[in-house]
Length: 270
Image (cartoon, rainbow, N blue to C red; front, side, top):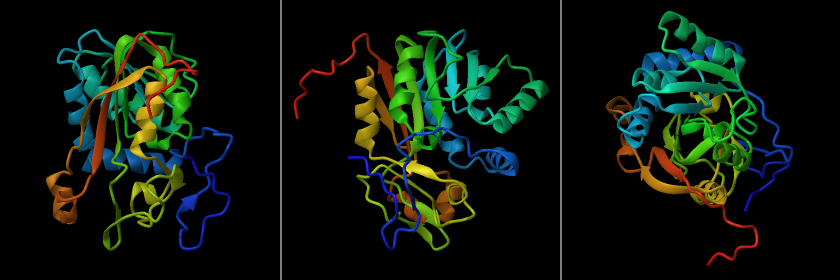
């Protein structure tokens, strides 16, 4: 059940209300966009873990495949896909992040097309035009994931796949004292911020959702879960947070678009 919180309960200051309007806006702009992009390039972070796992779940041969990289940011995954021969469309809401991606494309031309668009709308992408869709750590930035899944279902070719990576919903977050679990309930859908102000999630909010919400909303739009990976942190991060050897870190999911849609009046077994 989704919780719409107008005021956070006492002791839960990191909770932020989910707005009923689901208005999309980019938090990745200005100096933060530059800092975020440079930190990925320099340190890798979770991207260095999830990108190899995402590529592992894609077809072995990407040459000529049409792939939309939704929430592409500065294009770190888009470039990996293009280097493997895919025809990549990078989509992001942040014009500042797209500008960094286009600058990288100017330095090394890979044929990637970057387009500013809202993942909840995707008005720039035609119906059933994409062999695959990728979302690298972007799904938890999006306020209305049901609208996102609806649009992905629309732009994918039948039989096409969605590869999405996200922080594991059961994972703790880093803090100044090590690893710590947020104070919100696992079962809530909530927008929150980390207490670690040096981390990305300590600077901009993110959405926590239970795993079942992702899987069930995707299924409602014909996207059936095929495979799931739970990659562990890099050795560098494990050295800093050895607790990650025993708890989840990241999650990578592969969904396949089926040729059917569950009907609204269809009865599902409880």
